[in-house]
Length: 187
Image (cartoon, rainbow, N blue to C red; front, side):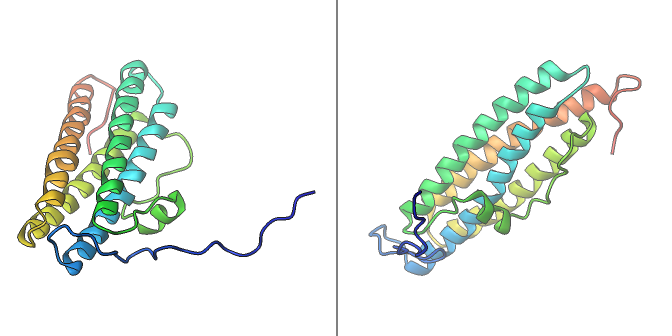
């Protein structure tokens, strides 16, 4: 029988703080950037999970194409999670890493535990993308004004561009399948 350790390990750095890093940015700018990035990171964690849920649970006539599309988009979102987390660390912050912590920080509404029909999946994914895109653009604008070109570039070049492309693919599926009689209903 093993004995579980009851004391918690020492925390090297508290979440929400930044350590000194010689990046030519003020501590306030780096702290603000890390805070905004962690919010986008938490939402991106949830979008990744929603894509995997959709990949596993999609049903119907569009199964094969959507199964593959959702998996590809999930992989792209997973890569963004890594990019966001690394940028938080570069800034001297602590990236949200525990999915339970991300669930506390996210603005993405909890999705149902059960399987949804295709129209609901597509619309939920589109709404999630839109929320992340709005937040990422707002953060990029503010951080650009504060002189943090690196974070601004990450948000625009990676988060916004990937999110817009993925939303375009989803919107095309909604439009394509809504035109077929008896398929997707419009919202």
